Image (cartoon, rainbow, N blue to C red; front, side, top):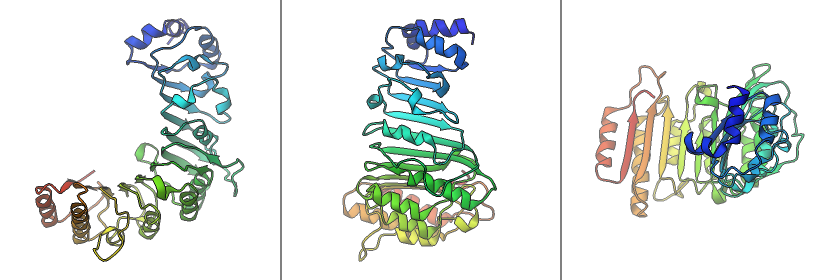
Length: 354
C-alpha cells in the first residue's frame, strides 16, 4: 500500500471505516512513514471499534484517545517495545487486547499491559521466540490486574531444547502475575499445533492462592504437559469451575493427563465431597489412554448430580486425536451415552478423528 493511499485512508477515516469491515482498521507501514501519517488527523475516530497495529507505529501518536467506540486492540510488539509508547489510549474502554510478542523474553514485558485493562477485560497474550536466558527470580515487580480473562498462547523455544527450561519459562509467567478477579484461564501452544508448554505445578498453585482463583475462576482450558495427579491437585483448588477443556495433542506419553485416575477423580459419588461440583461442561481431546467404562461412569455420575440439583443438562465432548492408532472408543458405551442424551439430561458429542 502506497504512502498516499494510507494518508487518504487516515485523513478520511470515517468513510474508510464505514465502508471497510464495519469499524475495523488494520495498519501496517514502515515507522518512518507511519509517524507522519498518524500525526496528520486532527479530528476524532467516532466509529473505530477494532484496531490491529504494530507497536512501532505508536510512537508519538495520540489520536486513538479520541476513539470512543474502540474496544478491541491487537498489538504486535518487538524486543524493547513497551507500553510507554502507547499514548492516550482509552484503556478502561478496551474490553479485548491481543498482544503478539516475538521477543522470546521471559517474563515478557508485554505482561504489563494487563495493569492498564479494567475489570471485565480479556487479555490474549501470544508469546513466541527463542529463549536465551531465564532469570531465577523475575526482574520486574509483580503485576496485579483486574482482568477477568487470560489466554496464554506459547511458542517458546529453549536453548538448549530442555523441558526444564520450558517449565521455568511458564513458571516465570505465573510468578509475575496476581489476578484476583480472573474467571477464565487458557493455556495452549501458539496456533494450537506447537509443542505444548511444560507445566510448573508449584508456581501455579502459588499463583492460584495469591489470585484467589477459588473465588472466581469458572472456565479452564489446558493444553500443557501436565500429569493426571498434578491436574487433580489443581482442580481441587478450583471449586467454582464450570467448564473444563483438556487437550493431549502432541503431548509425550509420560505427561498424558486424561487417564482413569483423572476420570475417577472427577466422578461424583453420593457419599463423597465432589471435585469441582459445579462442572457442567467437559471437553476432552484425548489419545484414549483410559478405560471406556470409566468415562461412562464419570458422565453418568455428573448427569445424576446435575439432575438431583436441577442444574440442567451435562455437556461433554470426546475428541479422538488423529495420531491414535489401533484404539477405538467403545461402540457400546457410545450407544449408551446417546441413549442417555435422548432423555434430555446430556449433550454428548463424539469426534472420531480430531
